[in-house]
Amino acid sequence: MLYDNPVYRIMGDRSVLVELGDEISLPVNRRVRELFLTLERHWIEGVVEAIPCYCSLLIIYDPLKITLPRLQDRIKGLRRTMNGAEIPKPRTLKIPVIYGGEYGPDLAWVARYHKMSPEEVIRLHTGSTYHVYMIGFAAGYAYMGTLPEKLVTPRRETPRTSVPQGSVGIGQKQTGVYPVESPGGWQILGRTPLKLFDPTRLPPTPLEMGDRVKFFPIREEEMAQWQSWRP
Amino acid sequence: MAVVETLEVLSPGPLTTVQDRGRFGHGRYGVAPSGAVDSFSLRIGNLLVDNPEDEACLEITALGSKLRALSDLVIGITGADLQPHLNHKPLKMWHSHILREGEILSFRGPRNGCRAYLALGGGISLSPIMGSKSTNLFSRFGGLEGRPLKKGDVLSSDSPHLHLGAGGRAVDRRWIPSYLGDWALRVALGPQDDDFAEEGKRAFLNSSFEVTPQSDRTGVRLAGPALQTKPGMEDSIISEGVISGTIQVPGDGQPIIILAETVTGGYRKIATVITADLPLLGQIRPGDTVHFEEVSLDEAYQALREAEAIIEKFKAGLFGDC
Image 1: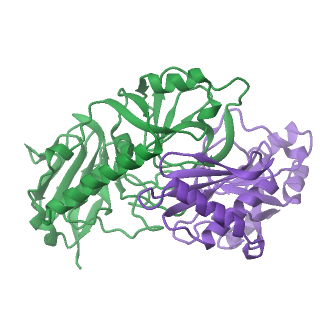
Image 2: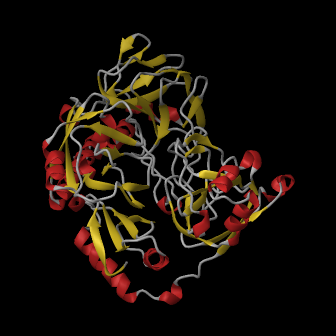
Image 3: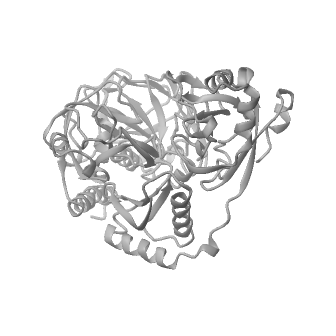
């Protein structure tokens, strides 16, 4: 549920978790985004950074510059003056994916699991627009949802020790792209040629919390031409 | 400004990385802070050799590494005593030393602590990425191509000869932390301490935990009595932001103190190590024991002011204006 008033939870002497609800839902996540973007536009002296997640905003501060009670007052002040008009509308980004084959080693398994054809899995995965709830776990790793009910799939029983960069996976109700090669437990349906984490660019990932994302299928031969595309 | 090759890696040791004070402001993109896990040693090491205190150093883990000086330079060695030697002569910890071109600096293994910091007069010449030279091993960027040092790597510094006057300095004994292997860490409870059963909270504050070999720069993993949550709680929670020092408790009840390579987590956090004690986390090694002491936020702030005062006094002493 969406809280009427945020719950402030102490995380040590230099951060506070501002909880705006207790569930994974669009209304709660939108409220997190509002507070995050408002804070960004009205920066509070002593705040080091803020990390928005599903239903909370973690605010990290320098305790030598601002104490918790003062910071809490300032956040309450921000919430009173929060103005929806200055919050930019979410963008919609399109991500090309080569589904199946060596790029999507779990596509066939997922199709069998749901007793449907691989084409149907692709149709379902590309048929929805997903919301970026948060970026975390690793640099540029966006948690997106929600998958259509028919595509909700358990994670792999044994996670892979190495999933290639760009792999597009699903796990439970979520979908996402592995921005760099890393271990991972999601079911891999395909791969995008886009670089979703590039430390030499700012921002280092084209995705932002709150964005809307649509996947679309491309053929292997087209891979090269999409590589430098920004969604 | 002349960039000069200063050190060549003859043997990297198991894990030697370039780290400064860390990369901040990019957590929203999932970018972890990285950085020296013992920031006190990093800062003092830099000050010993007349660098800005947040300059990048080499963070050398456990077993030593071996380096050759490619030009005359001054180095500062702080943190864990890994038995540094210049050619075959032992070097004092928490001192600055002059290395002459061709001389070999080696670290022979830990006498205490876990990570030594090697500061180079003139720093490590690298372009910062997102404001930092720190190595992010998971996402493979920063430092030297985002990887640990390897044999044959060459480090460069900015005008190292201008720092040679900083040779022969020592850190006052009373400011050198002791790494005895039995750690008392001060914590502020929260954010999810209320989800733990009374028994679990008591066990957390009254038990000794052993540090397991799975510990690394992502976290110090502990083994001890399982910290139980209240009945009916699921093992994980909805992912949220975390900071270094946060103590998360997965379903098996064994706590993990998060270090520098994580920005979000999906487990309950019973408490968080206070900022003043964070540098100690970098010196905890497998087999050590850890216990936790609860303090109030005011006590934590006071402890941080005291810790910063040590650095200020050290600076004042160096620059002769105390």
